[in-house]
Amino acid sequence: MEGSPDPNSRTLERVPIKTAYMTLFRDNSFWLIGLSYLLIAFALVIPFAFLPIFATEFLMVPYRSATGLIAIIAIAGAFGKLLLSHLSDTIDGFV
Image 1: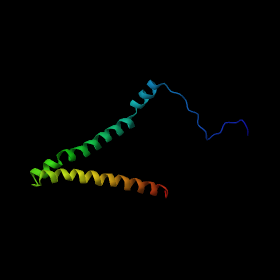
Image 2: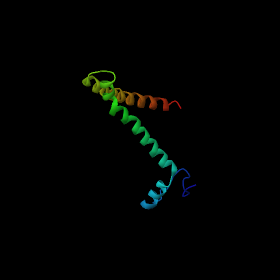
Image 3: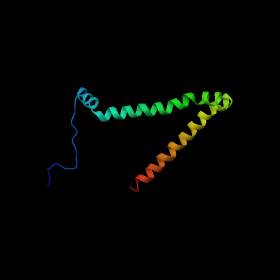
Image 4: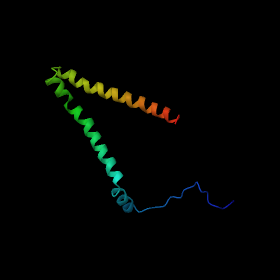
């Protein structure tokens, strides 16, 4: 029927920014996601901060080699992100 609205199309409604933020900040899912990101950040930063100290004092590794561990972890993480992002895009096509 010509002139009737398409049921698949969506019309966007403008919401005042203050209302949008208040709705977002009252949502428990928003705070749960924020808390999980905070905990993930601590889980990633703490090993990087203390790895060279642990390696030099307890494992008796030279400081230069101990700081090289962080470089190895960073490089492996970069390759892992590239590999896993490609893998997730490939698997997404099968689901």
